[in-house]
Image (cartoon, rainbow, N blue to C red; front, top):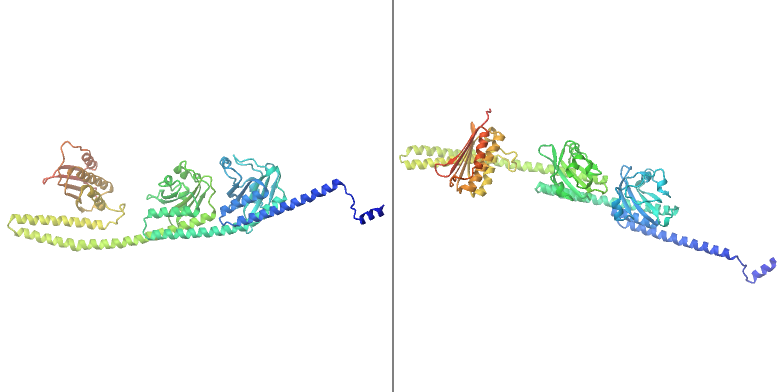
Length: 577
């Protein structure tokens, strides 16, 4: 029998195999071919994913592409990438893929890094689960989150440090994630670490360029004399652009030092934010102003003072830095995102703090430069005032004395009258020059520092346009030192009311204002108008009289001997040294 089988083999005849055994071998061969083809396709897909991830240097775009590539490679329904904060304890950014807009709206908040996600942060090793809910570390899902069962988590490292984690859930078809899925995603995460590092370096370079451009622009604006309000708007705009925030604001301390006032804002909610007052005591902005240290909030409404000022404005993550450095903090610079957005990174905080310090230093330099220019101007005005006093007034005095002597020598009454009229004109001129001297000694643009003389001149200048001509003004006595502020306020109010009445009713061509401070404060206003019409309203005149009576003084309004109207307002001054 063996000889017959050998002969048949020699003659080229094949031994017969069982039919079922042949089918099994062919099926196994086909299965292996399919596995090889699937491995090839997955390898090609992995290479394409790595190339796609590394083709863009924008970090946010790269992170989304990474999640999309991972979900495609392992056929997952949902994917996400969580970026770990520099403290290494929680997630500061969450990039989801696979959720619809409606599903995203239903989710109350993104994960913070608890439960299974927190386990991956604490133990950065690949993790595969058949059922998330059965794991002892499971924390559950936030309200509105879709149900998920199967899970694959892989850490992402950048230069050996944990950057974040890739999360993949719900493999399509109800299957579970296997070792091959884990290997593919791990390889993708390894390649992504290099791309992320390059993107971070590129992003850091761009941030530094924006910071340098913004600092240069603010410096040029401040040192070139641009209005401070416009500069603050520029600072807010540049801060918002650098940090990619939704809104930014600059707040300065109020004159009383008890509150912070938002002077400039840019971006969303500008109209709501501008003009907001925040107390210095008992608020985080006040703490930043005192300590000079930045503060980061996950939501602006965490601070009671900010929340009260904002009302229902949906402002979320907020970063507040001092405007200045050391003991020279001029105010605050703040940026914010809308609710639901990711908080600011530590890198953004450092950059904004450096920008705020730079802007504060430049602001201080600009103020010092403005002070020097103002001092130079005041020195020039003081020199002019001295020249007017020592030269012009003395010569006018000498001319007046000479004319007085000449008036006594003449025997013709008309000549004496003309000389006396000229002397009176010289006296008026001297009084006006004295008023001009006092005005020169008051810094322009500083009305809160101006004395009563300057404020009287301001009221008179404001009346020039409605009157159609400049009134004549003379002032005598210690108006800036002997008159209390509350008395001066009444005087200014009465003067303004008087000039307003003349402009509206008198049809005058000349107005003479005299203010004197001796034992009492006396104001006299004479016009050459039509006089007081009988039967007219007397509300303004009654108010002037009541002001005088409240201070123990008097107010007289009547016709002038040469025509027109005269107003005399007199109140006693308190005793003083």
